[in-house]
Amino acid sequence: MMQRRRIRLVIRYDGRDFAGSQLQAGRRTVAGTLKAELENLLEEPVRLDFASRTDSGVHADGNVCALTAAPGFPARNFHRC
Image: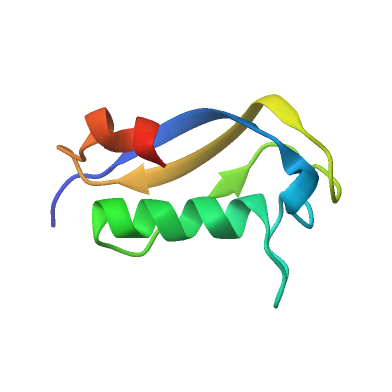
């Protein structure tokens, strides 16, 4: 099995179009949007763990989340997410 590593992401977002940061069924959330983009980029399922949460419409600067990825993931493309 390929060694995997834990990746910390420090993110900023304008929350006005989101129903909060955590996953919610049937609602557009920061975690759901970021998860979908990362899965597209990495071409594998992703589990995101957020260190904190925000409510609907709340902005964030410096929110931290983490994922586990295979070595060699295309970090240079993260700015596009």
